[in-house]
Image (cartoon, rainbow over all chains, first blue to last red; front, side, top):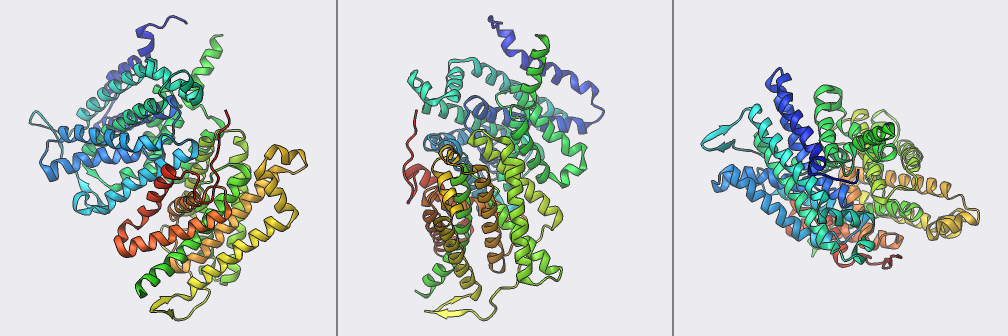
Length: 315
Length: 290
């Protein structure tokens, strides 16, 4: 087990890529592509948040703020400035990264519940601004988002979005898996275990945390842009408190620090409401219950727990 | 001048409610180091239960009493069923449990009650009282007076009774408290129960003025938390001062700057306090041992 080859490290991404390519064979209708696309888009944001929570051990209860910035970028860019959607998407990602950089500098010095509250406050501030700047954002009702146009071809079909979102997700996963094994990734794990020990070892704790915060903000922003372009509509709810908690629940459900877990967590919370109509009605209560039960009894999340069982069996 | 006075009165009224929420936070934090995000849900449950009991024909005082008792039981259940099983978890894990609990309670409230806004008849009816050109609702005076009574009762209790002294001992050093025979588990139980009762009372008091619905808890919890932070987390006088200050800032910002950004005030204060004076106005700087 000491020899870690390239294949070994990227194995999760390769397996998921294989599933992603073969799954559509079994899809009976466009509806399944739609759900698949939604799962991949959410998973992208969750992978980013998991980098922050699982690897670096820093919590963010306001990540939907970045999701909202990404979503509104592809709405405001084309409508108010006449920019193409793809350029707005990049613009949104850069904006999210910049805001994360500026906000992260003071905020990431905080620990534990102080950090949780500061990020939560940040997320809600974004939602308040999006709700109130009605001239730009359409206010509480939101605004419609022009369809993505690539090479003068309008992307509207769920099938196409399935491929776009899936490819981006796998790219994002490969990046995350590589980051995990990079010097930065190892530094982050050291920070996770003990910040003081890490700084004694010569790791620039603030700078590393900031790097990962900005990275995760960019992931969320791109995911937000995709979701907005796919749904054709954005509302301030996309940046709201409930959305932030949903992202955190997805991370916790799948397993903190597990890249595959991010996909599993996102898939469960996106697919469940589709399968169980009861879920839709009791969304808040069930989301809260899942969060509580997992944090009390299954703190490691689904994928790491299952993996541990398998390793146990093999021995 | 009349305008300013008006803003100050409405700010103090809402601020008294934030102060009570902040006091609830402080009590639980002192006894157990837990930041209870479900604190706002206690306020909501108090208000909503009282509303629906009065709609069912029960008189307001009795409805209020039942609402406080019911919320207290829920507070106890929260500690026993959700917090205690996670014994020894990290602060962030505990925060997520209380956030889960808050969503859960809100979701259940939405099913049991409804999604509409509700009001209660004021405890003191009558025309607004004119002072210096500003009009004060009699209910505002009820809110302020009740807040003073609750704070005083809590202070007397903590300062003058044996159980109160056990709370102080637990807050100072849990292990040492256990060694001298304090049942710390019961102290934490107690802190959850009292926080819930205070929250529910705040909810019943403010409902005639500010309306209530199943989802008012989140903002109230966050503003109460902002108040606790501004005052210095863990400091009871700080919580009260912080609550009144946040209420004042909010009312002044709503009056002179922009009413739509009223809710943003508390969060700007949270961020500013965290970045510039993390120990708050009344708190002591925490030195971490390595």
